[in-house]
Image (tube, rainbow over all chains, first blue to last red; front, top):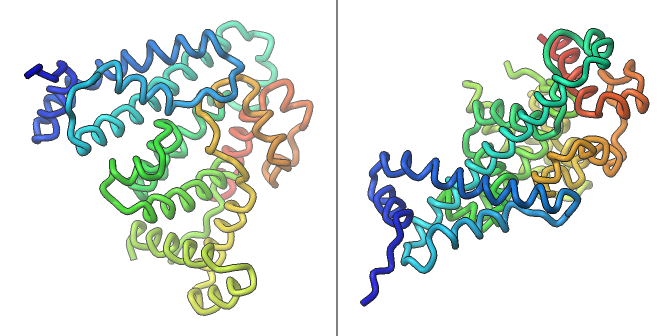
Length: 195
Length: 115
C-alpha cells in the first residue's frame, strides 16, 4: 500500500489532533505557496475580472496535499487557514503598493496637507481590512465568515464546514456583516449607541 | 446589556426583518423595537446599507487591489457622496486622489462628529 502522505498533510493531521505547533509550522508553508501563485496571477492577469481566490486556494490545496488522504475536518482546517493567509497576502501587497506610491508622490503633498496628517488609505482593500478588525471585536464569527467567503473565496457550504455551523448561520452572518461593513466604509460611524 | 449582547440582538432583529417583505417589515419592527428607538434606528440603518450595498464584497479581493477599483466600485453602485463627503471636490477629487481616500477623509470627519 502506498503511503499517501505529504509533509503538509502530516502537519494538518497533527493539528487536527490538537497539536498547535503543527498549525504554526503550516502557516509559512501555506503563505509562501499562496503568495507565489497570487503574485504570478497578478503579474500575468492584472485585468482579469474573473480572478478569484477560490482558484488560488484550491490550487494550493492540490499542490500541497496532493492525493494524500485527509479527513474533511482537516480539509476544512486547511481552507480556514488558507483564507486567513490570503487576507494577509493581499493586505501586505496593498500596503507595499501604497508605500511605493507614496514615496514617489511628492506632488500630492498639497492634497495630503488638506486631508490631514494621517496617511490615507489608498485602497478599498485596506479599508475593508481595518473595518473587518473592528467587526471582529464585536462579533468574531461574523468577521470570520467575511474572511472565509471574501478573502478565501470559500462557498457558503465550505465556510459552514470550517466553522462547524449550519449554512443558514453563514448566510445570516454574511448578510449582517456585509451591511455593517458597507455602512462603516461609506458613512463612517453612524451607529446609534445602545443604552 | 453588554456590547456583544446588544449586537447579537441587533443582528437577530435585522435578520428577522430582512426575511420579511417590505409590507410586513414595518409591523414587525413596530413590535420588535417597541420602546427601543435606538434599536429601530440601528436596524433600519443596516437594512438601508444592505439595500445600498449592491455587489459589495462579492467580487474578487484581487480585483479590489487594482488602483482603479475604488472608482469602479463607487460608480457601479451609483454611489452618492454621503453627508461627510459633500464638501469634497468630487468627482475631480475622486479622480485625483482616489475615491477611497475621500472616504477615508470623510470617515475621519464623521468619527470626529460622533465621538
